[in-house]
Image (cartoon, rainbow, N blue to C red; front, side, top):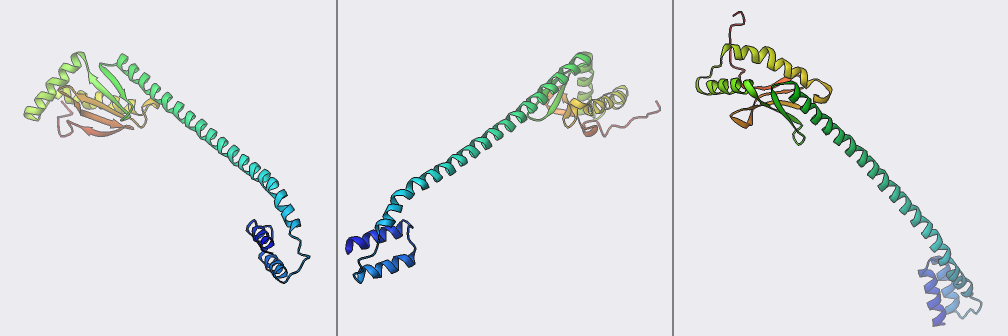
Length: 205
């Protein structure tokens, strides 16, 4: 009797019989009923795991496949984004070199800040340095310099910043006396900073 009760409990634990079936069969066993057929359920217990295992394996394989496909798609998208990002950076660096070749600046593109840093060269560097020094000491600059600064320098920077390779980037003229500071910053055609914005002059002269 005890052996049959153990087998019956095992069937219940393995979900091969319902609680109602368990109670009914348990009562029959306790009452001495000899016709209680546990072997038929035990046969299911032998056969079911293989089927369950197969179904579980199929489900697991599908999950693995879906996971692999998802990872592959993420990797592909990330790769495409990285390629586009690198192409954009290379495009801007080429643009910086083009400006260097066409102007009296040495231009460096800094990807971490998305900025074009302009370093004056030649005679323009000398003129810019002289006027920066004069502004630092007397808060004044030469009339010819400020006129050229506003009519030529700023407008040319505004135009550059609106070209395809320059959109969204900062265009900065670096201070020749301190290349960590800027004299002019323009972005998308708008003046963000102008070190000489407070200088006035007679436009008619």
